[in-house]
Image: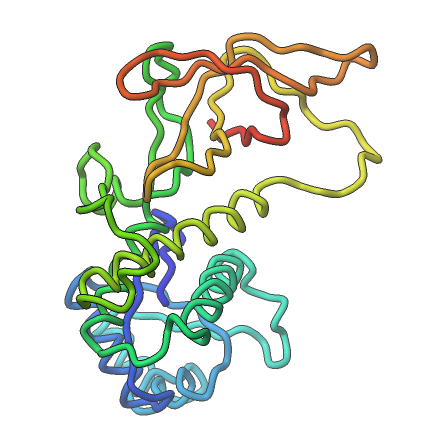
Length: 273
C-alpha cells in the first residue's frame, strides 16, 4: 500500500509473496501507473530492505550516489525498532489492514480468485481516496470539498457504485456481485472506524475550539451510499450554559434539495480549511 504525503491519496498493489522480487514488481507497476517518485519513506521490512539492495538503492554504500543521480529517487527508512515512527502513513495503512483482515480472514473472504481480489482492491482504493480532506468553498448552497480522488483524476464528480441492488446473499453468486458485496462491507466498516479516528474521545480536561457558523462539517450518515459523504454547512450553534457548543443546526443537500438538521457535535466532524 502506497500513501502520497502530498495528495493524501493511496494506491494498493497485490503481491504474491513477501519477497523482494514481488515488491519490485509492485513498485514498477505503481510507477508505471502513477509516475516517477522522488522520495520513498518506509519501515524496515525485510522485503523493502532487500528490494533496495537488489535495486542498488542503499544509502550506506558508494554505488547509491550513481543510482540516485540517474533515477532521482531517495529511499529513507525509519530507525530500527521504531514502529511508532511514520504515523502519518502508518495510521491509514493500519486502519485499512484492520478492516481488510476482518473481511478476508473471515468466512466471506474464503476462496477469492485473483480477479476478485484485484477488483476488490481497486474498489477499496476508490473508497479511501473519496474521503474529504479539506473545504475549498463555503458556498451556502453546496459547499465544495477536496478529496484525493479529485487531485488524482482532475474531476469534480465523485465515484458512484455501479449497482445498488446487491445484498449479502449475492456474495455466493457471480464474481462481480461478490466484489460489490465485499466493497459495501468494507465501506461500512472503514467509514465507521475512520470517522471515529477523526474525533478525539479523551476526557474534556482542556477546552477545544467550538463549532461556529460557517464551518464545513462531515455528518455521520450510516445510510450513505458507497463513496458518498454527507457534507454540511453549520447555520446555527446552540451553546450550553457553560458556553460550550454541544449541538448545531446544519444545512445539507439531500437528493438535490436543501435540508436542515439539528445534530449533536458527536455526529459532526469539522473539516480543516
